[in-house]
Image (cartoon, rainbow, N blue to C red; front, side, top):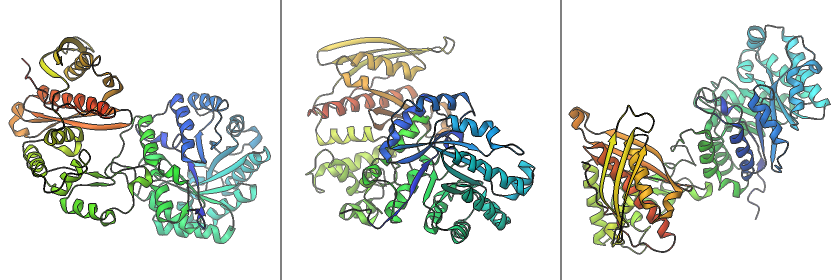
Length: 545
């Protein structure tokens, strides 16, 4: 049965590479952009705004390389503005470079708010209409599909609705295939969006309309939803909500919201199931932190902590989940903390021993031990790797340690330059003993490098993993330099990321605990895939001399 039968089709216009890149801290190299457009096809047939040709050398290079790529599912759009005041479109450097980009779809913006016409363009209202009319008409005459962004439409509609609608009618009459209504300042309310969209539809139906919304009022997704429900057929936005100021409408939220809740056809079911991994890919490509509290795609979106919630959801997932997380490629997570009940612990233990019962004494033992450790400063919510090692030890799945740290020494000299630290480690694997010295950028990096060099010949899987984050928190700052510190290290193996933890008054010892758990869990993950789980998390920690 066709699940999309009877649903209204909504097209997606992705402006991550242009508008998203204007967000603070967001940067895409040309190579990044190429990687992006090669992968975006897995999300279906989308329009992708590649940039502004001529605005900078990077966009020029990108459009040149795009000509050599075969992208059957990607509709590349070039972005720019209308011609300038008192300028003929055929003489416009902006429009000519848009044509030279080779893009079949060209998006240009023009003013739809009389305040901008007077105070920014500093021209007449009639001249602004000419800019829109002649720019759109010229590009259409060159055989291009033209999208017109009515910049500041909703602000203009509130203050001078007649003129804002004149700007829309001018673009439509000139041949714009889609006219996009923009909440450029991001301050409109859903009711205002609905009113502005309906006014256009009543005047110009059945014209195709889009919506482009910023998030300055925290309503970009809600406003986009209101626009779609009012009749627009194209949504514009960015993955993870990247964009200038507070960002743009978040496609990672908006696409599943429309398709799963709004009864609209946006992407295929297969594309929807990839949305979590694609959102993470975009964050990784931009070197931006991924917001784990995002709806649908964040790790916290289907994470459950309270014991009563977990007990209920294990009986019926609808009790505390609004949808099946697998539908967007996400997964349920049962968090373990001092608020956890037996249901939380049992669910986690069943990942390793599916038949274990609630009455099994090991369940109670795990709960007691976890709560005692959290009372002393551990926090397993962010350290699932260490948690799983602890549970495997309680289950008895580890009989011998994969390795033993016999000794380690770390020296650090901030005057030495970039590689300011040296670590020497001595490890034992089976009957073999290895001693390695390594330099590093800081004591933790030196220790991590030395441990990996000592163990990689025995456990090649370590070559595929890397430390991706290191966090230190002082737990009792009133004690000054004698305070207990908690170290959490995040490790990545292929697409999987997990945390491990160490707690001590000695920051290096806490770091070593977290590092050793990270390495041990990496080894276990690699070995578990091969069917063997005969190892232990009881690796000895030796205090540094």
